[in-house]
Each structure stands twice: as C-alpha cells, then as structure tokens.
Image (cartoon, rainbow, N blue to C red; front, side, top):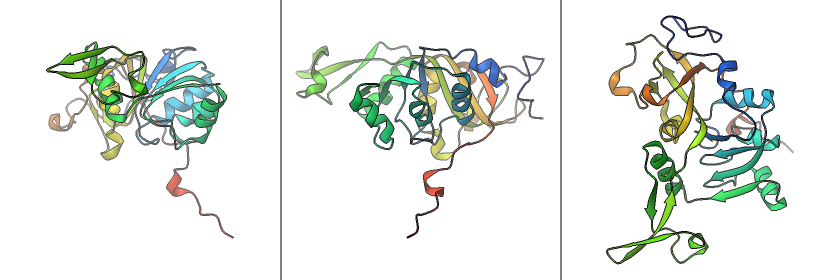
Length: 243
C-alpha cells in the first residue's frame, strides 16, 4: 500500500513525509542542489511547493536552468534565484537575460567538471583536479597543482543545504530506483545535500525493490515524498504554430 502524502513518521513509514514537512527544510537564502536535465528528472512537486511557499534568494546548483516554465526554470522566471551554478543556461532565455542585466549571478563549469565537483562533495572529498581550463580565463583566481609535470586546476567540491531529486520508486527506507534518462545527475545530487529529499512516483513496501536495481541507497536520503506529477507542458508536447 502506498502511504498517504500527509502521513507522518508512523510505524512502517520510515522516511516518508508530507510536502509540508519537506518544505520546512527549504528557506530563504539557502543553497539548493537539484537533479534533472532540461527538466527531466527535476522534482515537479517540490518546485511547485517552493514557488507556493515564496522561498527567494536561492543559490541553485544543477546541470542547467531548464526552460522558462519547465523544471527549475520556473524558479528563475519567478525571480526566486540570486545565483546559479550550472553547465549551461541556453535553453532558458530568462536566465540569460537576468545574467546580462546583473540581477542573477551565473557561474559556469564544463558539464563533466560540474558532475565531478558534486560527486566529490557527496563522498566527502575536498575537491578534484582538472586540466580543462588551463591557459584560459577559467584559470584566473584558481589554485593549481603540478603532478608528473602536468598542471591541474584545483576545483573545490560542491555541496548544498538541501538536495532535491526525482525518482521512479522508493521504499520507506529511501532506497531509490530511477526511470531511464530521468536518472541523469540525480544519484550524484542525492549524495551532496546536508538534507536530501526524494520526490518519487511510487512508494513501495520494504522488500519490493530488486536490490540490483537500487541506484541510490537510502543512507543518502532523509525524506521521501509522493509526487503529484508534472505540472508543466514539455517542449515536445507543445502544439506547433500554424500560419
């Protein structure tokens, strides 16, 4: 039986919480790390909840800024974000405009470097060494290390106050199974939050998940909430313009 969204920590519920419980951990000015790629794998119910709660001045960390009305892009469009750390923002013109106007700070990293910085934060490393960016503006203000006559940039690890992820299934202990490409950065993000909240499409009883299919062990997850589903229209679902 799937627990009610409003269930508290009753016997057998484990880490299952309500949306309101989850939102209590997300406050003005916090650093929020999110899973997703172009909105796929970004938790829609949590994004909607953050909007409705009125949280602002967020620093967000993730692969991209979604689209103007899809995924994490909804928070940017609503003016709730003061700083973005991402690999690109090209699919969200609102993010680009805010960056150009100076109303939102944007820090870029190559996608692989960003993923590794998040992974390093999740496993407790202080940072990583990369050769991408040597001899470019990316080197400015960065420490360097030479190993075997090769120079590397020192990139500090990334962590967040709260990490939010989306998965297909969870059990009450917070073990997660993802859905195809919705997996993307979610397993890395799940490890890197001081508090990690997993929004899932289905909560199954303990023992129902195939252990070989579990990608994120429950040890990394603090709360599990039941998803209300996607609240936006995907880009490929839009009706083509007619003449």
